[in-house]
Structures are given as C-alpha cells and as structure tokens.
Length: 112
Image (cartoon, rainbow, N blue to C red; front, side):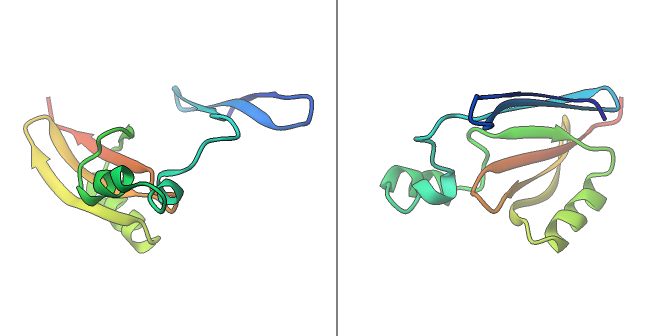
C-alpha cells in the first residue's frame, strides 16, 4: 500500500494519501480551529439539528463489494447506524456515523 504524506516543520502531518487496489484516499488537516461534528454539537444548535436527521448532508460515499457483510461488521464494531441497508434504484446502501460524529454512506452498486 503506497503512502505519501506532507508534514509541517513541527512534524504535524497536514496531508496524506493512501493507495490500495487502485483506489486513493486523501486526508488533510483542516487547521487548529476545526471541531469534529461530535464536538461541535455541544456548542451549536444548528449542528444538533444537522445530526438529528439520518441522512448524509455532507460526508463520504464509499463503494463496497458486499454491503450486508460490511454493515454487519460496522454494527458489530460499534458504528452508529443512521439508516439500515436499503435497496435503491442505483444500489443498496446504508448510512453510519463514526465516533467523532462524521457521517458515512456505504453503497453496493446495482447490478448492471
């Protein structure tokens, strides 16, 4: 798995790229004032309302090969399940939240 990162003079990594099986994930540090959704919700009424609905307003979409197996593993690992797996015209998907309150949508594409 190739890995590339950029760091500040103090050693703080501000950008990283991970590659696996033809997929690339880029991560970046948003700066010292960033608050995760799970932290922000304690000080902001708007954030509380955003997190009250189960839909992913902004977040990450990840395609997986077996959505039901992925869902079971995520649930067993303690992920907050926002929406159970559901068939849609474009594929089968579910939504989950991580420990910091970020929202993720996982999807298995519909057969061609």
